Length: 119
Image 1: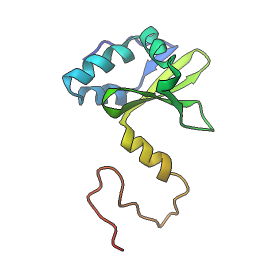
Image 2: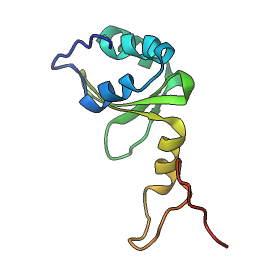
Image 3: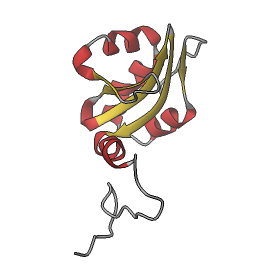
């Protein structure tokens, strides 16, 4: 597992470290150093084509990674917290369908769902 330098200005949540363990070796080699060093992360997120804001209410962003993975991070001033590592499809699903759902509505067509809607 990659060594992760934590500081008050750069933190990686535990769930990201757990997610990193589930990746294949090539993905670990690419993503591990990126989340292990604040300067590398800053260099990667400086490319506007790789960063997308995902919340109007909070300072939450995603950083595009190989294999359609995304790092979800917050940036407030100089403080960066990497909060999650997820698949683009999963993130897109919740971005489109996660809000405004009524309490009784069931979602059967999300990523990983085996249930199918009947028409």
